[in-house]
Length: 95
Image (cartoon, rainbow, N blue to C red; front, side, top):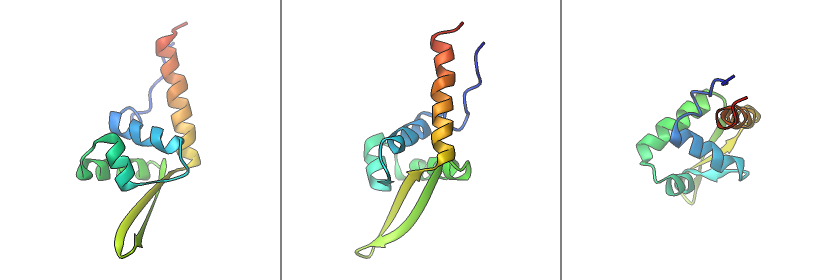
């Protein structure tokens, strides 16, 4: 009856990151940090977990000699998010 929820996405911060990335083509680290109100260290750790799971793509570059980290969601990440939402619905409307 109840479907398993993805443990990678079941963290509030990781779910927030993926939710942001579902609505934009890409976002930089500073934007995500501001939107989630997370600390840099915690955000870095959670992004690494999402990257290791194949849910996000991380690109590091320099803009005007400043480091820039951009994130985008992968196809696998989109599918995982959609499955997570659908599975969560089974908790809201159990049959």
